[in-house]
Length: 312
Image (cartoon, rainbow, N blue to C red; front, side, top):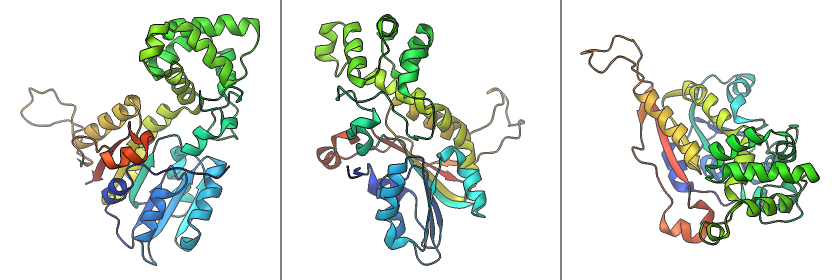
């Protein structure tokens, strides 16, 4: 299957980077290289783009997509949480812009064997972004305790039926291991009242999101890497991040706000004495959302939000 992914908020993100022709830019979630392709078009012979992705199929697709820019592009198979170390290997200390698109690609969703979608019945429960990792959705579903499943579904899926879903999973896996996306979806449907299923969207959506986040440690990676990315930026360098659910967006929003105003002095103090200096400024007071035109072309962009931070 061909690696296809419609880049979300393409013009807004690339425009938000303020690309300099001779600058160095990092796409930490390279995917099909839609954003990177537009960045490369703006670079001259001295400009450089570093593309990072942990997905083997994405690396292949991006390499083909960016072949016309091979003299200015370096592609690395890794998780963006290793960005600082990967750039150091390339003798790069600072960059002029970094972008992340935290969405699951259309290719990953539409390829049954990847196990990301609840729309397939016989797909294996995988959900790994990186097939070199050992933790799979199948292991999580069949080995996490009922309490851990409950917390995961509640916290990462924000599903009000998390407790009942976890209970049903444990009951069914005691009969036989849960192996496929279809089996898991049927169990989830059995745990949610029918009247809610009729009006509340697909019943498995939130649980599948929760398992995928846990499987790939998505929120931990994001939370633990934001400081590094801001530190890597040159003055006036920008960090553009596209999120797709409230958990990610909240982390980015709060981190950007703290980087802009890191002071921890009590509010009654007339002057700051903690010595913490602003690292830059938030460019997007409110997130940038897809236009109506984009939503018509790509319905999967509906939940996307872009936030931008500029280094001081």
